[in-house]
Length: 122
Image 1 (cartoon, rainbow, N blue to C red):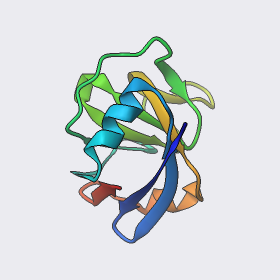
Image 2: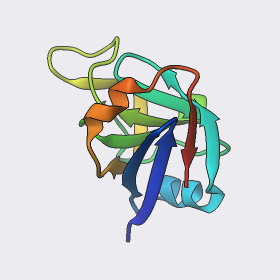
Image 3: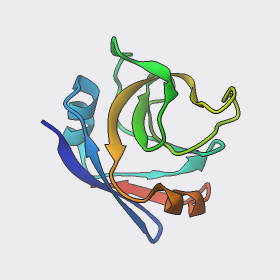
């Protein structure tokens, strides 16, 4: 079962969903979550009050629109394009992340989110 969420970054509202993984369920229990978004290439990430270990299906190479949880930094991540460690045409996280869901809306608007923008998950 998936959980419908909204990610609000400044004036941008992204419909998204959390999957049924242990990490996604832990995040859903903490909603709403507010953080300060940071950009790392075409990734937005921010600290959240959840601490989880890597899950068996964690990975580094992502798809545009996937949401991840980065255990190394206790961070919620929105992947929408190349990062500084991408190789070729892949989207690559800094290290393995738990796959927790995906954005349902238009990803092109995410490019307008700047570091320091308040991000709310509800």
